[in-house]
Image (tube, rainbow, N blue to C red; front, side):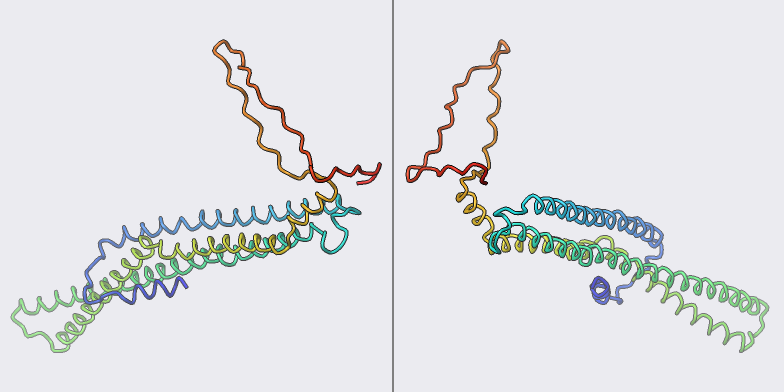
Amino acid sequence: MTNTRIAERLSKLDLDSVVDRSEELPAMTEKFQNFAKGFKPLTEALKTHYDAMKTLEQTQAKALDQLAEWSKNSPLVEGEDSKVGDVQQALLKRNQEYSEKFMTDVVAYVHEWEIVVTTKVETGLKQVKELKADLDHYQKKTGTLHKQHNAVLAKDKTPDSKAVDKLQRNDVKLEIAQKEYVTNVFKLCNLINEAVECCWKDLLPLLFRMTSLDKDRLGDESAMLEASEIVDRMKTLAETHHIDVSVPPPEEPESPSSADGEKENVLVDPPKAKVDSTEEATPEKEGAC
């Protein structure tokens, strides 16, 4: 999961090299906020793609319904081995399964990615804010205590032992608060940097899932068509009934115009009639198809 990967990267952080990055924090926070804004258009784009997949399924289903209606009482639907529409229906069902996987494996992944990253950074920002409040508190408190202590010394008096003890205790608390604040700011800045600058590490699983889905879908379609032998069966049906199912070649481009604006005459050999040397075509009975 994205959460685990980010946690693993942060766990490798060398805390012995902690430096004060508190001055960088405002800019780093703004940097992350701008980064996080990108999740919305990414999610919307993927959802739009999913909606397009569902729309294609609906139009494909309608087309298959019409083709099935037109195929009634014909050799296209006679016998278990000649129902060519069944293969298309199976392909449609498989595509529907892949579109749902796109939602659960791709769109949901981005949603999880956004939640994990924003939650960790926002939690870090909240914690740093609280630590800053503690630091400010002890800085103010020790500042007051030191002024009182110095005022006593200025009068050549001996400070009260309780006052000295209180000052020392708060100096220790200030030191701890300073260390905790600097450490957490350092970790937070590194987290933001990891989330933003190294976001490709979280993007790669997304691209892998999308590419794998396309690869698996195309592979399944090819395997299903090959296993059904649907193309060969339709060719056999066409040959039996002397139907030309070949795709016509693309039209020849228009002849280039001559300098005076008239098209040049280009001689093109007329298409030769296809002749079967082995047998003559059997004439169909009137009214038969």
